[in-house]
Length: 376
Image: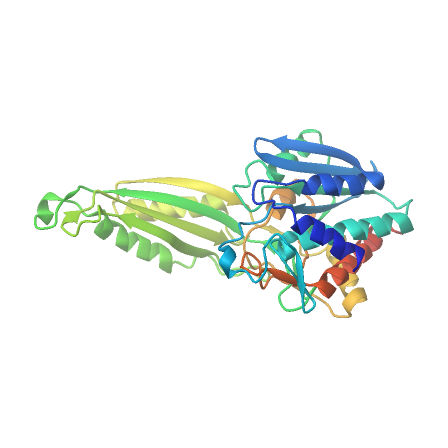
């Protein structure tokens, strides 16, 4: 079995459900320390983070990722125990194989190979690793970035190991992500008996036209890299559970996934304008989950596309689809940010797995990426 798969098995066997790290970063730091990296643990509240860096010169290439995984779900639905890595027909099964311990193992082995071949490479190599990407993401990458920014330590290029591939490894690079903005709306009414509606004020009836209008608006047309902004109601709750009671209030939760064609402030202003126009008595709390970012050109895109082509002899598609990633915290610093990782078909599912050959190919891609950026 190859070195990268042995390392991946070691990482999978550690039950690092958010925000637990379960010793994954200690394992990683030991390997990096042997390569001359300076290791800086950053523990914030319940979250374990690591900033590791080799060299003090610019440019700075950073591998970014997370050691935490989502819960396994019902154990009875798994073919094999989720934290016992198991090979079946060329695939490695286990929680985190694709999201994203496979990428972490590939990063480490690629770095090890690269440093041994090119001990005098230009610039610096860094690792930004967290145990809180799958959870609230409050004490993870965002706080490490705040720390780095406070001391003016900048990342030039960041490669996030999220599982970006769709059908075969390297067929998709995520070169940006949509912004995410969530709203928690409470529309107030007057509770009463359904037989006496003139004595009540039904917030469901009052809110429905406004929510319908919000769902039908074209917020923007998107652009060459982003689809149009999407508004989705994710939850509605009202009533006491009784059929003869008009509810006193309605709670609706919604989310925007938005492009670079609109700002969060513009979305907030338009929503309030619509709610006000409908004469609603309401409160609305906003959660800013992340800004949109885009790396549409530059040295990182060129190096990544070349690395994939050199490894598997096809060129990747550049897409911004999918959810959010910790790249949204790194991009605002001015860094070029891409996501490149395994096939994402089984992420967060029971029986999560990854093709063993894909992790070996991904290791080669990462090594070639380092060579394309840090070797003259």
